[in-house]
Amino acid sequence: MKKHTTLKPLCYAILLAGLGSSVNAQEVAYPDRPVSLIVSAAPGGTTDLAARMIAEPLSKALGQSVVVENKPGASGGIAASQVLRAKPDGYTLLLQYSGYQVITPNIDKVSWDPVKSFAPVANVLSAPQVLVVKKDLPVNNLKEFVDYAIKNPGKLNYASSGNGSLQQVATEQLNQMANIETTHVPYKGTGPALADLLGGVVDLTITTPPPLLPHIKSGALKALVVTGSQRLDSAPEVPTAAEAGYPDLQVSSWFAMYAPAGTPDAVVQKLAGEIEKIMATDEYREKAETLGATAEFMGPEALGKYTEEELVRWKKVIDTAGIKGNQ
Image (cartoon, rainbow, N blue to C red; front, side, top):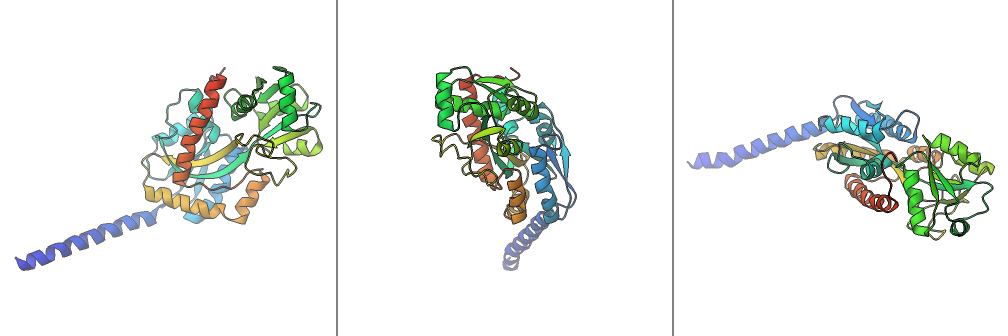
C-alpha cells in the first residue's frame, strides 16, 4: 500500500508534465500553415495599405505566409461575417476599419457584434483627420470658422464620403461642440467629395491626411486643425484641435486586427507580441508617417477597451445628430 501511495503523486506529476509539454508544443507550432487576413475594403485604400503593411513583416516573424484577402462590401459586413464563421484557431483574422467596427453598428443592423463576436488582437495603424475648407472661405483658423458659422447658420455645406461615414459623424461632433449648423452633402467616396471641395461646390470636409496634403501645400485648400493628439510631421504648421481650443475633438481612423471569438489566448498573445515588435521598428513607423498616420500599438486588452469606448462615444454623437443608415 505504501509503495502504491508513493507512486500515485509521481504518476500525476508525469501526466501533468506530459500535458504541459503537449500544450507548449501546440503553442510553438502555431502557425504551421498560411494565415488568412480578411480585409474589409477594396485594394488601394488605407485599410488595404494597413493590412499589407503588417502582413509582410508578420509573415516573416511567424514563419508562415499571412495572405491578404480583400472582401469589401456591406460596410465591412462581408469581411466580418466571414471571420465570424471561421474556426477560432488563429488562421482566419480580420483587418477592420474603425468606421465599420464602431460607427456602422450604431447606425445599421449588422449580423455580428463588434465586441462579442471577436477577440481583439492589436491596432496596427491610426490616422487623425484634418479639417479643411475651400481656399476662398474667409477664415484662417478654427475660431474664425466657428464665428463665421455662427453668423451664417446653415449656410456652410460639408462633404463626406457617404451617409454614416466617419467624416459625417466627425463633422456632426464639431457642430455639437461648437453649437454651429452645417449641412451634410454625402458623396460616393472621398475622391468625388474632394473634387467638389476643390471646385468650391462645398465648403469643408474632415478626412485623413493623404488625399489632402498636396492641396494643402499648394494652397488649394486651407487646413484649420488636425484632430489627433499631435501635429503632423507632414504638415507641422497645422495646429491640433486641442491647441485651437477643442481638446475633445479627437477623431482618428484606426485599423485593427481581430480574431474570431474563442481563439486561444496563447495564439492572440503571440500575434500581438509579434505585431508590437514590428510596429516599434523605424521602417514601420516611417511607412506610417508617409501615410499621415501613426504606429501607436494597442494590445488585446487595450484594443478591446478602446473598441467599447469608441462605440459609446460615437453612439452619443449619432443619436444627437439623428444620423440614420442609408439616409
